[in-house]
Length: 263
Image 1 (cartoon, rainbow, N blue to C red):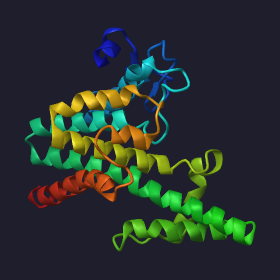
Image 2: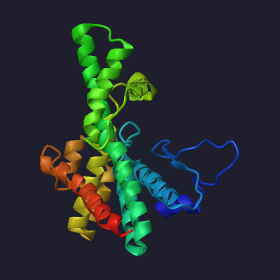
Image 3: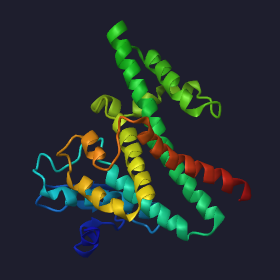
């Protein structure tokens, strides 16, 4: 199914004048295949982005037997196949790469991405929740109050490694999600950790996990997330489920710490 994207020209990959930046997979309807857009320059990051977007494409194609209102997965599951595909590709490349400096650079990139996608989005979600809660309790909040809350919720993410200065207080204003899609950012952390936990399960079980995983993707958005995950032998209400995803990240951080002194 993934090979079809290459065979039939469903990927717009070349860099071109006036072409938009970024990358995405655009689903259409269950009867029509999705399209992938990215800007491929041959770098490692581009390969991982392509794997990520093709994961979305695979998810949509497998779910094409569902009704139009059920085939696209909800936000909480939308990143499962993409993050899974990216992790699979990353591990394959890492297994073949022998240069410690390149391995360290690759790992640092993945750790930084996870930091932004998981921990930072959790901090953003806590910020949103605090702002809306105080607004209901106290009335309208001024710019200074919004900035103070932002510092309060973002600082713990950095521990004692970094102290946020006053200039950081206004950074909440550039996060468009706070205004046009309130309450959305939790899905980034939820979806990515869920995907990593599913990938951890695959590493534990091996090839016999594949059929269940493909059935999971084929369900699209037709069933509640907790029920779908249960079909994979996991329970999202169990803290251990989420710990499995964090173990993937912990393993990368441990490897970074091992490689860093040597390079």
